[in-house]
Image 1 (cartoon, rainbow, N blue to C red):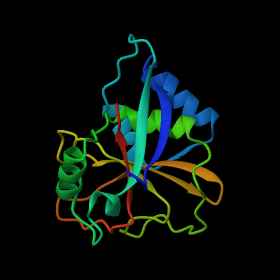
Image 2 (cartoon, rainbow, N blue to C red):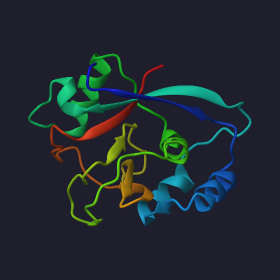
Image 3 (cartoon, helix red, strand yellow):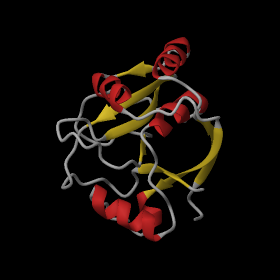
Image 4 (tube, one colour):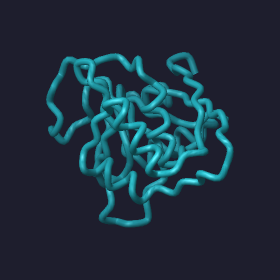
Length: 167
């Protein structure tokens, strides 16, 4: 896929407390939805760290130039050979991807896809009242890991970028 940026990260081998401490030490900002997801995501600290290739893909590159819903995005991505990520991938990606392009748009709560945000494509958590997943932002040089809430009818614009697992 020509429009895809690939990042290789290391995952695994960390407890929830270790990840919280790493996020705090890196001065990464969390919203309440991200904190909630961090508490509920499965972790396997006993597994050794392993590498994951992550593709950052604008949904227009999946043929969805006019935008789409999450179910449509995920179907197109899986059809293109991409994989959904575990929730924890967002935390490891945020900790390791430090040079995300910075948005100068300081608005944080607008009910729209933020400028230069990357949404991590994950299966929906089982709890219907839980946030849907994570997105990453760099707002004027400050890194953020944010959780979001939406339903299956929410329309994502064609320039929205999602992170998928490649391997």
